[in-house]
Image (tube, rainbow, N blue to C red; front, side):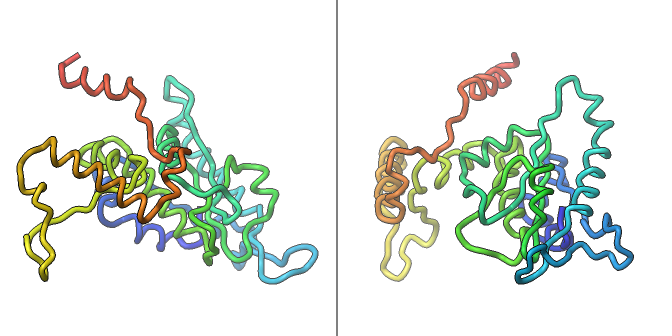
Length: 252
């Protein structure tokens, strides 16, 4: 739900997420909040009660947009044997900061409805009425919620089945694994006197894995020692997920 659907469509219509949409692996729909304005000039904002700088987005068109989305999905929802898991998220600097672990938890929902604020934000009452959680992508302020929403959609979508060629593509990378990713190299072997580590040319897989783990630990300690505090930022994939994949390979 946004005032700038073209911005969102442009960002998410490209690269991996764009191809995932074309392949039917994920559906992303943008809804223009202005379409639900009750003002003849399609205004969606007004001055805040009590005074202050800037304009505030009104609850009325946002709620109209939300109702339209839910009603459009109702027929699909009713055809399902299990209840639809839906979550409404407001991108806000006061929300908890998005992590890879939380993004993985969001993959378990059938629908995510994301509200993008603008101007000075939105009327508090719409948050109380429809929003399940507020999320931030960092401790800084942007002009609107569209870019944070794109970050969230990208982060969640790439962990859905089939979006990347293999689950290991994201499970072993920086943050998801609990560490930063190890350094990587490609041709040429010699770049301005900097050589590729010999172990990577050895063909000895056990030694390569050992080097990569040690290099990941070293890189994490150098760049992000806060990740080593024991709180655990990595993602634990349930064992049943791994087992079910193995059963599919065996034809069961």
